[in-house]
Structures are given as structure tokens and as C-alpha cells.
Image (cartoon, rainbow over all chains, first blue to last red; front, side, top):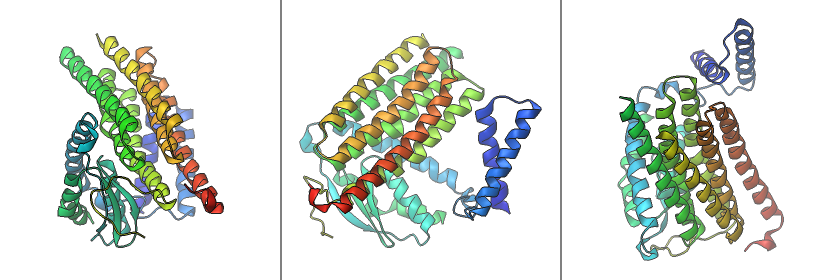
Amino acid sequence: MRHIISIALMLSLIWLVNSGHYNPLQLSLGAISVFFVVWLAHRMDVVDHESQPIHLSKQLPIYYLWLIKKIVISNIDVARLVWQPKTSMTPHFQRLLISQKTDMGRVIYANSINLTPGTLSVDLKDDYVLVHSLTTDGMEELLQGEMAQRVKELE
Amino acid sequence: MSLVVDILSAICLLTGSFLILSGVIGVIRFPDFYTRIHAAGITETLAASLILIGLMLIAGWGLVLFKLILILLFILFTSPTASHALGKAAWKSGLKPHGLVNKHDED
Amino acid sequence: MNNMFLIVTTITLLVVMALALIRAFAGPTVFDRVLAGNLFGTKVVLLIAVMGFLTGRPDFLDVALTYALINFISVIGILRFVEITRKSSPKEQS
């Protein structure tokens, strides 16, 4: 039930932001479309803790702040590499074991790897993720596992 | 007050433009496909965010602000998925990365 | 004053799109081309947004949002198409 309320709130917010016309007729049409989409999603059985991860909503903002800091730092690193000669690149390509147990944790981990430029997850399996990194530093940072630890705390 | 906002938005727009240019020059210069994805990543995370934040500062409070936030969120949600799909499709079709420093185990 | 920076951003975006097109034409593998196409699409979204502010018509943002959606779906679609074609004709692998 909480998940249904959450998806209805989110859809209503998106509708209100995108519409910009607030007379009774259009508001009721919007409400009808929100109900219709919620009903469809319920019928498709996709309204659950995976599509509406509200149990994460408390810890997520802290993780996002940390991730934004990481994204800015790694962006500057890659931008510096672009303006340097080619020899300063040291590409690595290897498997990393992952400790997250749930699918949600694995997806968050792989997405975070992708969001920071300089590291890219190429393949994701049950127990490992295949990572391509642009520099030795980027790979070593992942091997040290601060990101993995933080994602694990989210689960 | 409005002068401060103007200067902040100008800084955001100019930094974003510079980062976007760096990213695309990386896409032109970098030697193989897997390294090029990293360069494209710059233009899709920080550079796009900076330009959209610059526009948000110009727009001020209102519906336009929320639409810009929606666009920004959408770009941030989809770009890692798109680059993962690109990398995975290339890896499955047998494209090997060049110039590796370490040796990796073959599948 | 703001207009000047918006114009600078627009020109940069146009240059960036031209450079992305160079990679799309030159790219040795099909994935390089798809990557350049994806890059081009994201830049079009930003360009539409900036142009909307430059001409004083923020309604353009709806177009930008729609374009972002279509761009993502088209990239995934092209990649699936490439994967399926490669599987059915493995001899063409380079």
C-alpha cells in the first residue's frame, strides 16, 4: 500500500510540473490519468520495493552527497587527462568481487561506478562486476572499497 | 543579490561549456572505444549538470525551474544505463580494450 | 549580460556537436558511432534548453524533455538491434 501511495504521489508531481494549467477540468483529467497509470502498474505487478525504494529514502541523501563529491573529483581528473599527452593514460580492465547481497545494492553499485567518469562497469554478474578504468588510481580506489562499503550500508 | 546570481550562473555556464568541450575532444583523441566512453561520461554528468544549473539560476523560482530539475534528473538517471549498455554490447561482441597496463583473464 | 554567456554556451554546444559528428563518421566500430550519436542527442537536449532561454521562450523545455526520453530509448533500441544482427551473422565480427 505504501508503494502505491508513493507512486501516485510521484506521478501527480510530474503531472503538475509538466502541465502548468490548473483549471478544474484539466486537474480532473490529470487525476484520472494518474489513477489509470497506477492501476496499470498494479496490474503489471511492478509496484513493489524495487520500483519504489522508499525504505532507502532516509540514507540515500547522505550517499548522494558523497557521490556528488566523487563525481566532481573524478570529472576534473578525466578532464585533466584529456589535455595531457596520451602516455599519461594507464587503462585497467579487471573483475571486482562484489559483496552486496540484494539486486538493488548491486545495481546501485554498478550505476555509481558508471556515474563517476574514469570507471565503467562493463558486465554485471551475481558475484563480480567487470570494470574498465582509465587510470591506475581509479581502479585502486575501487579496490579499496569505500564505495562498496557505503552501498552495503544502504541495503 | 541579482548580480551575485548572474555571476554564479555565468560561472556555471562557462565551466560547463569548457568541460563539455574537454569531453568531446577526449572522444576525438582517445585511442580506443572503452576509453572514449569515459570521455563521453564527462559531458553527460558534470558538464550537463553545470549548464542546467546555470539555466536554473537564470530562471528563478517557478515552473521552469522544476522542468529543468526534471531534465537534469532524467539525464543523470539514463546516462549510466546507456553507457553500461554500450560497454556491455561492445564487450559481448568481442571488442577488446587496447593498451592495458594489467593483464586480465580471458572469458 | 546573461545573453552573452548564453550565446557563448550555444556556440560551444554547436562546436561540440560538430566534433561529435566527426567521431560518428570516423568511428572505426559501430559502437563508436552509437556513442557519438548518444553524445549528439544529449547535446541537442542542452541546446534546445539554452535556445529556449536565449529566445525568451522557456516552453522549449517540454521539447527538450521529450527529446531526452526519445534519445535514451533510441540508443537502447539501436544497441539491441546491433546485438541481434551480430548474433545471427557471426562472420562479420571484426
